[in-house]
Length: 303
Image (cartoon, rainbow, N blue to C red; front, side, top):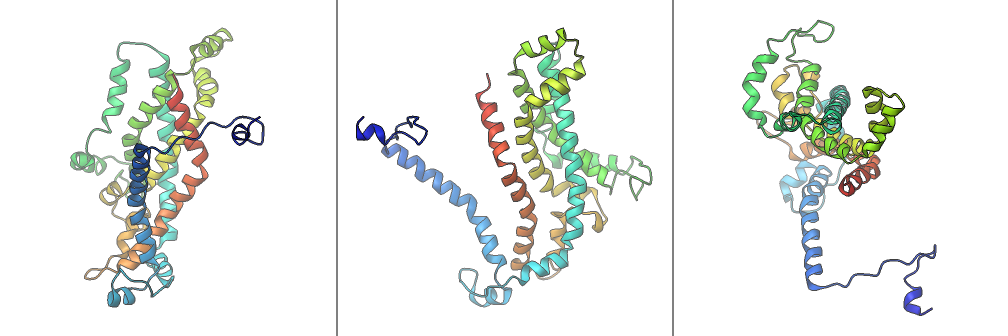
């Protein structure tokens, strides 16, 4: 065995793929990807750097300087914006919204993928159309609707859909279902139909085919969508500021407004608050990163 061949073998004795040559085009591609990555990371790094410096130092020396290091901004932001309470509000909204979105989307996607009928594509188009409408265009009719739909007192202090957690949960589910239906329906269409035929021979009902056959096979796709949905719904800012009026009910993203002054805004303090708000989504992403990547790669290789 030659030396070149031996260096291409791993510890398990399996031959590793040969290394690709660094052509000028490949170097250009790597340079472009590095530039894009740095462009995306720059705002985050700048926010972290700003949050760790006192306003007095940056006001005197400018933001393009080093010094004035402190963690007081994080303590002040946590206390001023009452992040502890508003984090719980985000949990009350995000968890039910994500679970409802995935459940309802998987039901619709199962019908689209499992059954062939005339309105199949129409149904998929109706659910996907919600992602094509700008949210601002629906602001006035939805605001009027929410102020007129009553709720029991135990569900809403205002006895309306307006200014309630249920309103934000429903609006997020409505806007997020389209994307999830589109992804899950394509994923389910790639599943072998022999599985359903075998389940029908065993006497499985439609519900059992959905719950016990389809859903376990869609776990990678559901994990990937759950990661995205948690990030999107948790970071949602527009509808919370429009459909809620009680400050104690605001999610954590909307509570960042508490860090703005009437005549003066401490950008260092706002940066610290933004970093605190972003931490939960980063933790969830890194916890589910393996499932997220697996779901994307499996979905890409289907069919």
